[in-house]
Length: 158
Image (cartoon, rainbow, N blue to C red; front, side, top):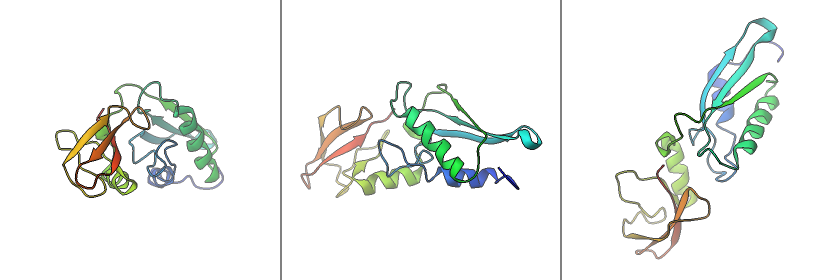
């Protein structure tokens, strides 16, 4: 990278534009996959180090996420990047940001509701029922709203 290194806060902003491959309305930052961003080293040897935690250890999207993060950083002139994958502590839906919860609802997916009732993302009714424990991806279940009669995915708590 030529010139001044961008601030870590700027890098976080860039990463907030990297979509999750399975739920593209969310970014890797919204999901809490990106755990840490730091500049390391001295002078010309400085590199950007990122730590990510996949949503589960066997997540097939991890390689795509790593590629997309590197591509986004290269697009901003950052070439020296070390990406570490941390499996401990394991990712939890508690790491999804408030903005991520809102984006899920707007997209038609009920966000995780630990300790709260699942609400229909279309009409906000709590009168819902699970149709199938498994939805369009392993992290979601299929529900149906008994008020508006619409089916929807629910992002399961992990």
